[in-house]
Length: 495
Image 1 (cartoon, rainbow, N blue to C red):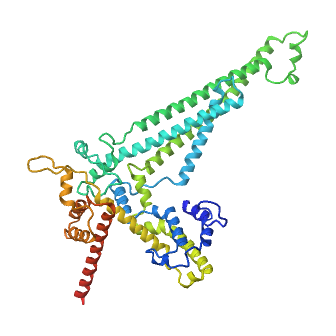
Image 2 (tube, helix red, strand yellow; image 1 turned 180 degrees about the vertical axis):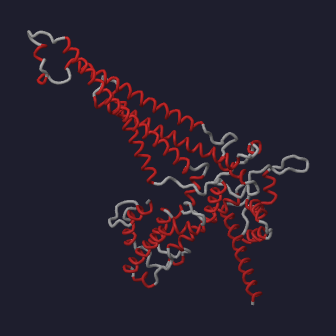
């Protein structure tokens, strides 16, 4: 939705401000498009096209996870047993909202007569509804927390329940930002605890579930108590009314005239029969009111139970633990990066590609010099270049990240200073390209991936960020050249 809104406002026919209507402004911006300066740029695009690509990439392209980031996030979900977990669907949010509103409305009507009678009827209704809504949403939050906590406790019991508790006391936490193969040698149970638990006591708990049941039971008891009190009050009011006004109006009472003016009093037998009739009618009305009142209480109780059960069940099924929610945003539930790109990125990339073609066609129509030799760079090529830069930055950040390990010690057991260790192998600051290439050859010759990473950290410790990027580029070039030579050799031997 965000990308569609951005595209709609970006291509708005009337240029206004900011990104709104920017595409029409770019179509009229012909400055330096007909020249040759942009052809010498590595990107090979004139300024209007370059700005459009940068805008669309900033809007959604940079949020598309690269392959290493995707694989790292997917590994986190797998190791934390959350690869099948999905967020709540829209219909589930709508159902919970409808049930909560119905619960709050019924509670508001129930509480309204018990609010202070010194207020007006409208004020009483407002206050009753406010209290009811606050209680309903508070119950929903408690139920969601209970479902999430129950899920965590159940997962710990199923995955790591048979593990020795002492073995889980000192598990090193592994977050999403860390390499997920850092504990590849550990058991699946240990890897699960490292990603889900935030401490030795963070194992989930059942007390929120018990608390929810107690609060729900108290709420249901309070509902029936309020209804019973209301029924008794209505019954008393009805009896008093019958005592004063009788069963029916005086126009239909043949003895009404005898109880007023100078008429004699009703005979005792008539008075007794009339009182019995009033009592019988009062009991029938009270029984009817009781049935209606308890029926409404049962319906409201059913809504309460349905709401809390749905909230608990949805939280148990769809709640993420640890960094699971962030990892899901990076994978969108896909298992492979190729399917992730097709499902998530392709619609956005196609939209940007069509806008670039529209802008390029407009520039061709208005600038004859550009029409003779227009740019052939697609948005996909621009996107791949930017993603490559992003990938190199991520690789560099992962390579130079210091490992959380004990300091190396000398034979005497005295810790060796990190500065001395770094200075011994880092090399001089400000290395030339030839020296950086030689260092890249040295790193690649090690063969083992762990040794390469360790040597890269040593060699790049004393370098600036630009030189670190060059060293990484040289390493990738050597790696690609070696792969091409190996492929060529295999083809020759086949022949």
